[in-house]
Length: 369
Image 1 (cartoon, rainbow, N blue to C red):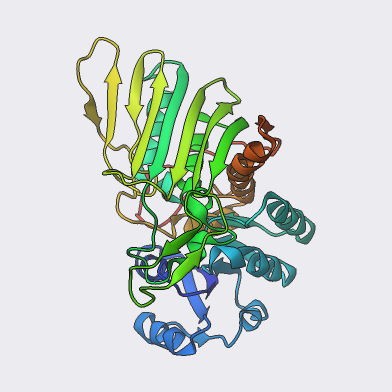
Image 2 (cartoon, helix red, strand yellow; image 1 turned 180 degrees about the horizontal axis):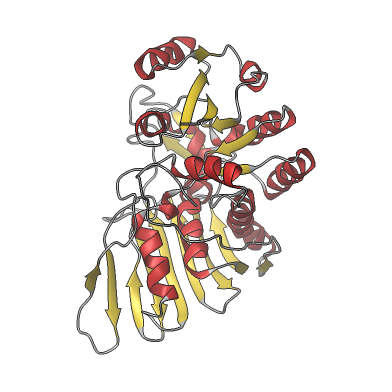
């Protein structure tokens, strides 16, 4: 079987599920090298997953002629630098979210990729899983009638009580919108289409955060980003709704996502997950009904977007988690701050076109189109 050769830059917490899936589930991907600041960690990963190479620096990976795609799993504040360097070296890039920390950085990366004739893809890829693909089909097939509106919220008290190294969540490229907003906005636009405007308010509730998790318990974090953002999104097809993301609130549920139509309401599951239950309430019914999931990839299938990108490069088709989508999501997320700063509606100018829905797999882990 012909494989696409990938080098991973960054081996933080998220890397574990990528390594597992890319070496077991997605057979057409071959990890040929890894690079991280802690070489001992890289060497342990090398042994555990039988990876041929450990690179001393990311530039060594970029210079490796075998490498076709760079998988960027570094911290959010580093995404732009790593993505840009990889593109300049002539490599396709698949990056963890977000694409970059600012809209301007995202636009620079897209322009560079176009000049170089390269592709950028990236997380989240949860929208390719069974839940969101089922939601998309239910809406497209008219189960809720004409989409009218939506309400989505990611509500939690922050990461300093459980994450082993939470400081970067409160720095450039972090915050609840750039950290968790990609899941909600990516799911939203894949179900309902392009966002045309954002009107919002953003605030920073706590100027400092006390870390209570190990190993940095007792240290303080200076907060540099908004931690409560709420706004109204208008979609190109006419639906209007709200999105809130926050690290400031004590709440018993993290994810809320509802889509309202002229003939029914759809409960969208946590868009950070691949295969949670979908519920539908239709006109004339008294209670929500659980809907069967109609697509593959119900388990944690991170790496699915990378596998689809690799297949798309071979099949000469657009990747589903492509750069245009990444930039549109980044544009929408950063519009919350821009709208709040100017206390006015922010028009979204970035283009976006939904790619084809997923196809049922003949063999799980192989992307046919």
